[in-house]
Length: 234
Image (spheres, one colour):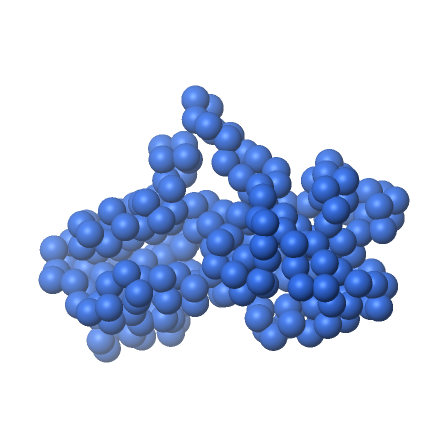
């Protein structure tokens, strides 16, 4: 268990976050770790699994509403909220950059906790030149759908910004640095003027879709790091 906790702390770069945002051990336990269940949050399906075949440990993105009475007392619970969002959803997400075939990836936009160095909340990279319509098809395949897409479907896109926020300053910076498509979780009205003036195409993936993509990716990352550990995706 300690190896998994240490691996996730490093993978999510938790020391870049304020102490109350770092995540880690939500509830301690001492089972030998052979099976690890991963889920975004408690659900009826997860509780059924916990009753019928409890894992040796549980990782949750949002553990706040977990009913600990439904877990055996020796099953530990791990969690990472903001570090997961910024690492494996729509931010500076290295696995996603690989999936989108981005090259020359650079940081875009920053957050900073008091007393800590800034951390990137987005990325910008060169992409295979394709029409916006083709990118729409690919993003739909990767994420299982889109909330919305704005822009000329025939417009060629060869540089993409992926950012876990959307405001006027971020859209303008992305445009100034050559991005033609801005991928984010949700469309934000305060950015509308910048979108219209820059001609930026915007793909809003949807927060839950991006989390589900991140959860699948986390399961793959853990499987590669610990091949003898069975990862059970909820």
